[in-house]
Image (cartoon, rainbow, N blue to C red; front, side, top):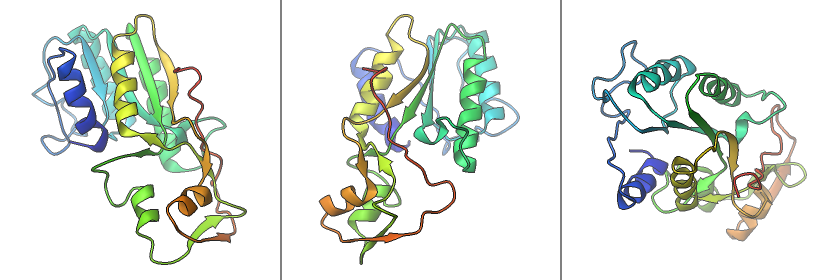
Amino acid sequence: SGFLGRALRPRLEAEGWEVLPLSRTQGDLEADALPAALPARADAAVHLAPTSPASLERLTTWARTAGVQVFILASSGNAKAPPPEDPYGRWKALSEAVLLGAGLPRAVALRFHTLFGDGEHPDRLLPRLRHAAGPVEVASPDGVRLTPTRVEDAADAVARCLKAPGVSGTFDVAGPEALTVGEIARRLGKTVTPRPARPGERDLAGDPARLR
């Protein structure tokens, strides 16, 4: 039901996958028990919901029992080294470690970078910049560097990793162009005002070379 899930499901179905969708709106993935809708057998699992490492550990245990051959986790550029200072980044880095240590045949953590596209939530970065009423404040001198990534390209990365034999590990899913937040704001017709950098603000540009 999320931004990436809505783009991914029709892509997988068009390729012939039989997709069993689960959603946070249909059941609590944080419950102590696994969702009853999980099948006894499955070829692949794609985990896009922002659940806890403990919930992910339960799901990887199910995946081993169900014969899952590839498990893909949606991670974030915030998880990259050095160890992130923000709680979200630390949580994503821990989730990656849980997945990669789960003993599955193939485990892939995809670090998605600044997804954008039709249907994105108004709280996401680009809509917030687009609808800003006044000047956009950015960390001096021009804001952190990002790599905006179309949601369709992110769905394509998931679909390719599902069927790529031997592919495991961590990959950046990032657009081809690194831009500061100031550059993005100016492309959207906004003026930019620098402010002092806040603790934890750092370069978050991804490198798509390994995925390519």
